[in-house]
Length: 386
Image (cartoon, rainbow, N blue to C red; front, side):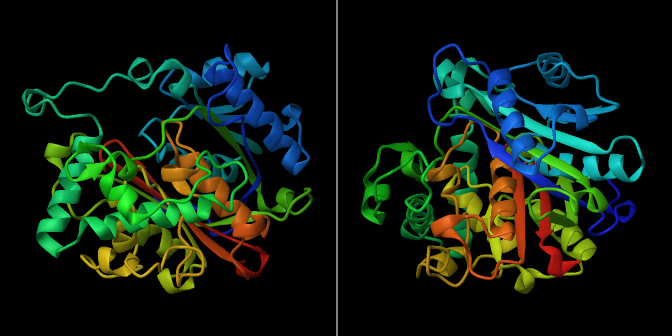
C-alpha cells in the first residue's frame, strides 16, 4: 500500500460498536455477531444499512466473509474487501476504505468481524498451517512462537519475567475500569508468575483471553462525518508491513514490522511518538506490548521491560496503554485488531468513562497478525488535529 495516495484527515471513523462479548448465547454465529455490531455501530453514528455501499469483513470461520455478510445484511455494496492478514487486517482495511472513498468507489464503508472461538472451541475455529521445519518440535501454536520472541528479548536485553508480568497487571488494572471487560478481579505479578506454564517463559497469564465477540467500524469522508451524530475520529496516518509468515523465518525476533508501519503512519500524520496521547497496541501476549512500544518509538529498543516496570503503562502512569484492558483482560475473540481501533476512537471522542485519558486528541492503534508476521498502524485524531 502506498500511503502517499492517502490524504491526511480526508476520512474519519464515525461509528464503532462491539457485539455481545465473552461467551455468547448458544446458537449465535460469527455472522450474527457481525450483524449485532454493525447495527450498533450504525446507530452510534446515525446512519443506516441503506447508507452502506462498501463492505470490508474477515473472520477465520468463513471462507468468503464479505459475501456471507452482505447476504446476511441484505445489501449489495459497490465496493468490497476481504483482506486477511491476521489480527491487523482491520487497520489495513481502514487504509483500504479511505483509498476507496477517495477514489469514489464507495461513500460509507463498513468494517466488521465476528468470532465464536470460545463457544466453538479454539481448535475448531482455525487450524494452523503446518510448517515442516517447526512441527517436529511440537510447538503450542501460537504461544510457542511468541515465547521464542520473549526468550530472545530476555537473553539479548536482560528483560525479566517480572517485567513481562507488569504488562498483564497493567492491562488488568485498566480492565477493572471497563464495565464490559471479561476479567473482573485484580491481578498481581506473583499471580502471573505462579500461573500454569504454557510455553516457557510464558504462563497462561502472559497470554490473551479466549472469548467470543465481534466488532464493527463505520468509515466515511471528512465532509460527511461532520454532519453525523458523534465527533469524528479523523484518520491522520496509516502504515503496514509484512515481514514473514512462520516465526522461524522472522528476520530478528526482537524487531517487528511495527518499526516500518509506525514510521509510515507517523510520516503521513506529521506526528511523532511524543504527540500521541493514548496508545492501543495488540497484546496477544505480554511480549508484544514491549516489542510494539519499542518499535513504535515510545522507548528505545531493548528498554521495554524497564519502561513498564514502574507502572508507566498502568492507570496513573506516564503513558496510557491499552486502556480498555486489552486482549489480556478485556476480550480476545481471535482477531483482536478491530477492538484496538474501537478504543482509540472512544479515547479521541472522550467517551471512555472511568478510563478516559484527559485531553486525548490523538491515539495510535497498532495491529499484529500471525506470529509477529504482519503489522499495521493507524493514527487517529480529533477535530483540533486537522
